[in-house]
Length: 93
Length: 547
Image 1 (tube, chains in turn yellow, red):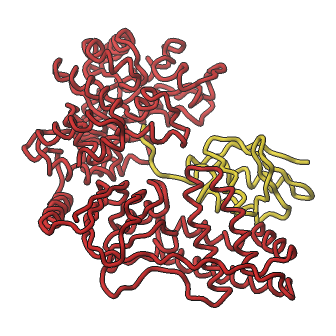
Image 2 (tube, rainbow over the protein chains, first blue to last red):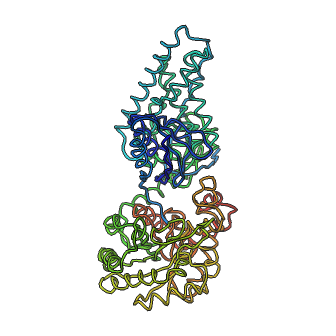
């Protein structure tokens, strides 16, 4: 089953706005996608409550799974969303 | 009775007025047993959820900035397919409709609470969504803000984003909550709306409707039944601060005229215009990592020179402190083999990289030197992660060899603070990076949210190291500045000045507040604040001691 390991790009982690953008993108895909972390049960990527509950931090690695036709394309799209830093607030040294 | 209690001040400002409490939402009704038609019940619940989401959408579209971001994420929750699934499951298990809703929300709430920290603070958001859904489903009045008919200080156990986003500064004078933390939505939103707010204030539970209170959203002090003279004094001090903020500009000065250089931090070419436009005496920390990260090959000397030239041109006539490359295994470069490090924060990073790659440092200094020779800016250069006087001396020598007369060191390693005297004898200035210095002093990983309290820049141990470095600078007549997060907290900035720091570098947005706070205090005030903070047992006590 196609899977992809991706590092969370948003420094705040997969919370608030970055989580919302990710879930929105997942809902727009043609195939169901799950997201998990090492040692944690994967959850439905279209569920904002489940995704926030994963508590994926900025810089942490998550694993995406998808199955069926268009799975690779869905993973490509979601990988881009995850890698982008959606939090632009300044973090001094 | 004049009882004072305190929490964490998260949105500045002073206000005084009568308390109005957010009414506790009604208990969800008892389970009345299976629904006659579970499928129809599910449809009614879905309609209620959709209506709650639509209302949040509407609020999100009226809000802006952080409020809009928070509401955007929240409006997706009622439409969560996993939530609907759990409700459906509860209905088929024989729960009544309201009970099924409450249980489904509770199951998600439990996992957030179990995660602790930031996620536990989100639990109140889910309670609010549950209450709104139940009110919609059962035709009950929607939970919301009190309306006593006059301006009031809103007191609650916690506030949901939907409540906070609807706050009207004309009616709500201040917000005080028992729960929540500095990262809670209440804190973020109150700040963005401009209402003074205090969170994590356990004493707020004892406040009743109509009690007069005085709230200071900067210090976190909440005074019940305050003395009229105290209210007057607090409001006047706030007025002075605001006036200084509006009238403010020019170099930073204490009330008795002591000069404190106010500078900005700059971390990318994209921020150059905003940084140069800010009313500051220059750049206190120019991070150069952006030139090296996210690229396959090392930037050439010519390319670097061009970038520095643009920065120095934008700051012609002002000071620019350039920090040389601070990369390492935690911020890896694609064109350098960093090897494997089990603990990159303690590894080969900052100036330590120059042991392996001295040419990279020399190239960077050559580019800075060439650009400085062409421009009108006063260019200072400093090295990150210096631990010994020998490293500082070697760096200064390299700088001078490339025509850069003013060479300094970052003080981020406790050893460098302890030996600041020896280090400052070999170079021209020092700049304290309080975030890394805090991490190394408290042996607490900056990436670990669970240790946030240890990383609080008010930790007296950190302040003691700042004092040591500043003292060494004063004796040798060398400038010692602060360029970490600590410099952007107005009260802490006064403490730092009281410890002997001569410049403060921060995000451009923090300049006004820091300048105004300094203008309201004399040098002696700052010294007294510093002494009080140093004498405190922990960060929380240090904060409380200076107000």
